Length: 276
Length: 257
Image (cartoon, rainbow over all chains, first blue to last red; front, side, top):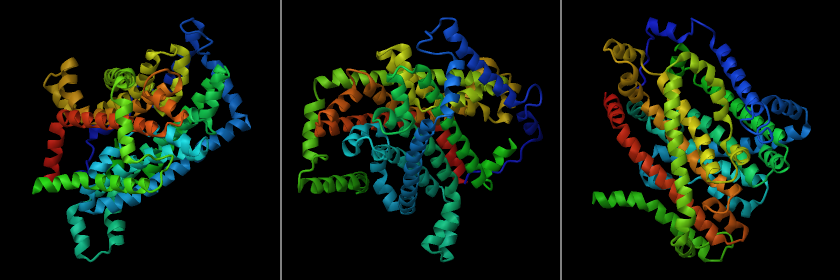
């Protein structure tokens, strides 16, 4: 509610467009090439043993080779399946519970201490439990993913509901809005930016935990392949898979950002971003 | 009366949950879930004594050192990169890639490069935690109000003074958000680096319990990790309140209008 819609000062718009010099994407490309160059040179100059850090060219060749393998895409599929199911379950439960708790001042006060206590518990602490309960199946990954993502989203939903304008809420109530109408027309629009932030954060957390579960527990997916490549001494292959997980993470980030922008196109925070 | 009410709100739900857990487990013994009493006794037996010195303390030390270095490094690099538009444009895609990389995959890499020792574990924590701080610092510096910048320039603030009195304060809220993210990543990495290849530490001990089906001990280890997480979050909240006192004050004023 503190959002003030700022008219950009004329000088400000010009400033953010890198008018002088090279366009941003080209500079970024230089950065990537420079990074790959340094990586290529490190083993060549003997700074790191090539046995432990193969040159970038070798890793990239292995990565391109991976793209042609069915096994690689099957592993990606396993990882993404756990990611998608875990994220969806976490978001839905957190959204429903967040609305119920957030709309009642009593529940908000009563649950606060419990939430603040459970939230910081690292989900990897549950790895041993997951192994005992489910073994190397996808359920293990799901347990970790859902636990970690649930809090991310829940907290954002609670913040979002708390941010609802009091006057708007009173108005809705005096117009005799039903519970559902209040949620749909008053709470939801205010909460949506918070919810999207929560989903964006949870999406990358879900990937981290999916990979972690596969790496440590050994359920099917990219993480397991990395562990296998490492113990099998296929070092270039291991680096290629790691780069692949990074690319996957990057793709998730970019997609969630685009979706967020699309969904929130009407919101001042995004409208402002377009300008500056 | 007011105090009692606050206490009720604070402890009500936890007491209900523990009572529920007690009733649910005391009927028929469940192999996977110990009763509260059993867990409490095991916790005292297992963790109060030598284990604090041999497992908990080393783990926490590595976490604190790793986080500390990551935060300082992230802020310093973030300021350096954020204040220069060209450097920012050049480095951004590479940094974004590293942030998108799930930090646990670094464990096998650093195991190869550094070897299996304390240095590796600290390096994993630094490498995982530095990105949220770094990128948030860049973001904070980038979004500084241009009117402020011009004002400070016209007052002749430059170089170190401008960073100290204008850049750092106005980017602190964003930086603190980054630090908050890196705390949970650091804790995750502390546990994982010990689960992998290690002969001591919390992560190692908990996995050891699980492999030998010492279920109550395993649960007590999970409780220890939980307590560390909660402690970290409280310390952070306390620091954040102090560092951002002016900011929260400002927000309250804005909200009151």
